Amino acid sequence: MVALPQVISPTIAAIDAAVEANTSRDFDQVIRGSSIGHPCERHLWYRFRWAHEGERYDGRKLRLFRTGHEEEARLIAYLRLAGVTVEAVDPATGEQWEVVALDGHFKGHLDGIAHGIIEAPKTPHLLECKTHNARSFAQLVKAGVAVSKPEHVAQMQIYMHLKGLTRAFYLAKNKDTDELYAERLHHDPVQGAALLAKAERIKGANAAPARISDDPGYYLCNSFNCSSYSLCHGGGWALRTCRTCLHSTPAAGGTWYCERHGRVLTVEDQRSGCPHHLYLPSLVPGEQVDADEAAETVTYRLRDGSTWIDGDHARGRAA
Image (cartoon, rainbow, N blue to C red; front, side, top):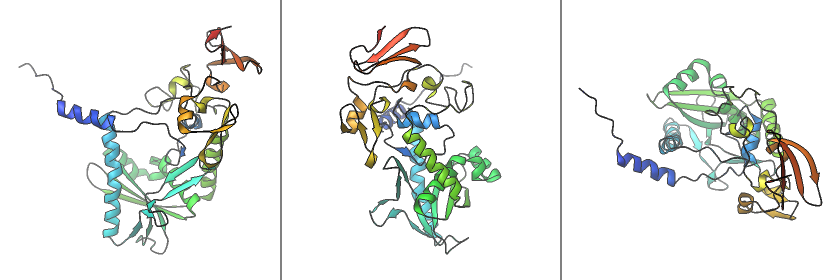
């Protein structure tokens, strides 16, 4: 018997298309606490500088993210049912707890602050809720969160550091079986300070930090695992945004300032750039060989040996 071809439901396809169409895919405005534990500073710098588009996800993946986010409310409800008091919002603002640092260029959001955790009822805990598939959950139970999910630990450590909390309660759920796992963590002031210093380096860097590996096939670097691959290893070109321009710098209040035009840049300005855009040299796939301050041009020798001039009247023209 010949097997019938599998038919994709047009209704499901329409659902996923609608989810994709209704999901914002803008650049990250700040360095995020949820990503500060990523081991590659270069990747985080590219994202902060809007050097490439953000990750693109299909409808199924986006629905999965939403499921994880919605599960937080259920886990908080279970904690409350067990007698734990959870402050899911900041009473001063009525909004989700937020941490802000580095003149507004670093931000993160807490799932809550828990009081009355049964293992240590007198100590307030930072609350972090996560969902895992069966394989990830098994690794978590076997090795603990520090080994299986170091990025989650980094997120909790910097949040504790900025909120002045000494403990965190990590509550994880197996999406396949509904099994729960909990772990308490102590604040590590050394790690918290190191993570904040890492964010400060990313904010202040005018050149791409060192690669985590010079091997394009390294498991964290290959094109399947890293959205920065084409820039970092593939010789690609960065986007022309104000954040990739050597004239702009992070300023107070989470803003960006343009030295060329002498003004604070709106978010729309930053996306659009201007005719006077000049790449930060480390974003050009070549070597800088000359600069003409009066003409506002910078000349590069590209990897193929050709010469390229970056500047207002000479953009893209061979020398």
